[in-house]
Length: 220
Length: 252
Image (cartoon, rainbow over all chains, first blue to last red):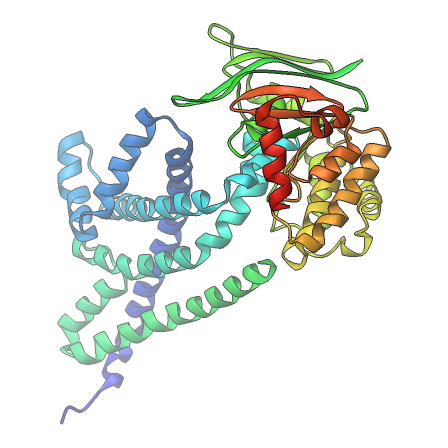
């Protein structure tokens, strides 16, 4: 019978905490950047002419249909060779994670926008509103309601996906876990702790998501 | 004086020619009803009057707004179209209320966002209009809490809030339960009696005969007959219109 020794992790709490901060930090900045990319790409996909929307589709599918791990490694090792620019692991990870998230968010935005009835556009036009205003005031608020569940889902995955940055030695929670394992020889305790920490961060997020969804659906 | 003049309007969707040169001049204060079988082009024609559909050929003049359509004529831009639509109200078959806004906000959206009216002034206007359509007590409700008839009355108030010169009604009662049709028709009737210029597409033949100054019959993309309700509905000339009316009386 295995005897758990969580006390052995005590000296490493600083590292774990640091790793958790890096994970949360990466999640926040790549979700923000990904949302921006996703919003722009999603809107262009629904409204722009083909010569714009087809390349964007290509971007979306490349990032959706290749493993994020491959994208991270490619951004770090291959892209610098191709464009002749040195890139820090942190930067490579930021770009890959943001574009990856952006590709999924773009599809969520597109789906949400297209789910809004065409009659809503017409009603806006009929009272003399212009395209941009109809989009902002009429369509986007309704699209957002439809999108919220998928959006939260994708964001939860994004936080978990940040664990892949450890392969290019960015010091996130998982990376610190493997470092600590190497010195403490306590893999069970370390990885259990890390799993619990991921859960502790994400579970409340799902609860918030439920409440937001409930509140926003109140007018339906 | 004409409030609206549409001349030789042509519209095709792909190979399908829906409007084959339709003209209509509506005098100020007139109520013109368009009748015809589904697919005759009457709704498409109505939607051409506020340019929700772009004609491929023809001309449209409403108040000071003039548009020409055809090859080599530059298409009107978003801003120009928006300007036209400020003065042309439209009521849709399926209401198309904004579900994320309260009833009052639905009505004030146009004045505030398009005309730049102050919100409190718009609220006052909105409450007046809601009272006029008999929904003063629903100002703070959301559209999902309303019956179909109430929704349509809000939609009418929303269109009126822009103080349009012309009102277009696209089958305003077709999506309603029979017992709710009356309340919407009575609002339209009172608008007519106030002298609002209106073009309606409807299947309510008795109402059309009663409220209209003229009734036009559309068949296969052409306005084949137009005249007083007496002429069009009681003394139809063409066989097409006769058979349309008799089929209509059988089923209603």
